[in-house]
Length: 308
Image (cartoon, rainbow, N blue to C red; front, side, top):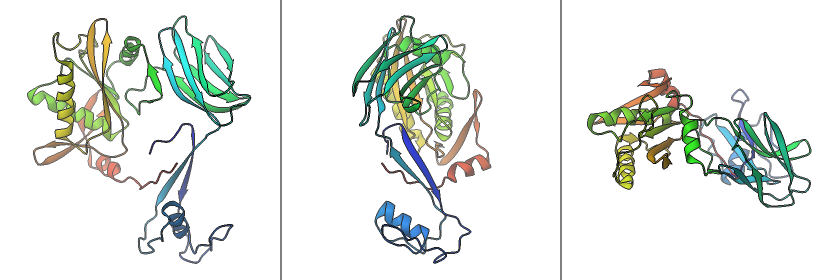
């Protein structure tokens, strides 16, 4: 599940070399346990451990830090608004810093705090909620990381500049441009790229942008909702499992661009061609068939448990 940010993550890995059971009894303030897996299963699932499972599990326990956090940041052309929440905000300050300098605001409690941006948000800006030399939460704003786990707490009210930033470095590992919604056999190229993004660490497809990065927009008079549904249908019908993605529409200088942001999910996603499943990865600006070891690594994901 998605937890509040920031958070503390603790990774616990059973030592497979430790003799089991009975090598070290686990004794403390709570119940006593014979061995590690028994204690962890009781803690996470409140049920007896299956002693016949014989697995070396990797567990991740995620706990939100509730002292203070940035619940939403809205970035406009000339204003940044940060909504602060938390349970221990006494003495906290907000700092917005960049290469040219920094600005501080005292935090009087939960609420909205505003920073004027007369020249827009500078590249490599850092917004931090802190108390003295201890940070509570922060957001960093370099050029965007294309489609990688888009932060839902950040709202851009300047879609044009956002699109310019996306195009700044051209097509590559995390960005693919399409002149229009593909038809017929040309659909496969876009779909296998989406599968590659999802199988690795995410990426963005821009529809309405030529390969030379010229923004041409979707055809005039096109039914935008129908175009979105067309792409959604392609993904649903041809990719397995269906990846996590978000379609968005950006208006830029009178032109409409369809943005498909694909999140990396930590597993392999196949493009299904009839009865055959094909796996792809992204290598620079190219989408290529995954090699056997890449497919095996994608499926060899340790089970995790996330709690809040």
